[in-house]
Amino acid sequence: MAKPKCEICDREFKNQEALEFHNQAKHPSSSPQKSTKSIKGSKKAIAWAVGLIIIVGIIALIIFSSSGAEGKYDTFSQCIANSGAVMYGAYWCPHCQDQKEMFGKSWEHVNDIECSLPNRAGQTAECNEAGIQSYPTWEFADGSRQTGVLSFQQLSQLTGCPVVQDE
Image (cartoon, rainbow, N blue to C red):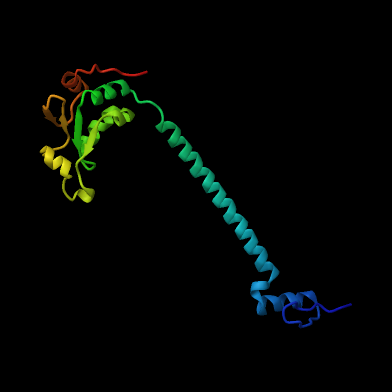
């Protein structure tokens, strides 16, 4: 019977157990146990990555599909935009956020102008030229202005747009 031989250094051993011990001690990167573990680890990592990609994909699909839905006040907000009304605001302004939240998804139809520079480092030239001093400031087609959060009824009176709740 032939003695087991190391494939790397051609050394002969009494038995298979001695060869395996030698491989673990002298050639650990080529040890069969080590490579099996790394293959199993790779398969686990791939499975995790695929699972994570699937989860992210599902979340993106949910967000994308719901973002295309129409808002409750689309007709009203489109009328406000068509009337020439504009809201000047700032991303950091809590009252501006309150005004936007009133409209929900329908806000996308409203004409709004961001006045704040990044990091609240001042005001844009457009808002400076318009003389905007507080947020939110609504400007209407006739040139009149109102500051603060306006109710739907106030916006309706100032724009001539009926408050319509879409189905």
